[in-house]
Image (cartoon, rainbow, N blue to C red; front, side, top):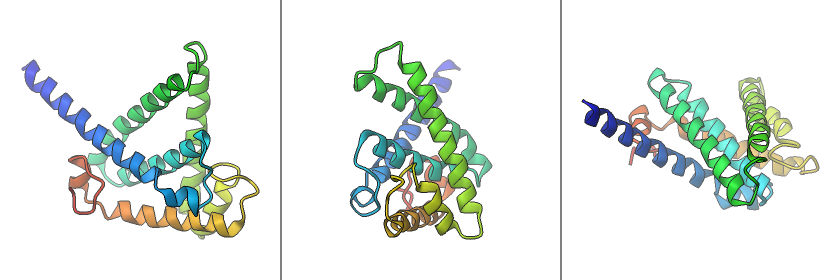
Length: 176
């Protein structure tokens, strides 16, 4: 009885790990940093990952079957952030405070980006939402527009990924 439970749990963890790696891969696309204005810094990489996580979670929101995976991905994201803080030398006593701050930043962005995508003009709303967050406040509007377009394209790409592919650990439209 317990062996089946352990096996299912291990398989679920493998699926979440594959999905998380796919999200990280999408967040590390050079285009985001070279053309779309995301700073190539520790915080810029956090912003790129936060944006990609937001888009993944938004995709999962469309399906009851994907909601448990979404929660597992949030948990995986939080563990990764905690590990990253420790790897860059943040002391054990400071990590919880930094994690509260990063988690707050993430959920602030989720709220702002979600409202932007639900607005009458998502492109313009995303440009405004990125200012001072994923992009420096002084970032030219045309560069911010590239990130907004990239975000809308990524949302559409994720919408085309079948639920069955996500449940098997893939963010590919072909399900591999």
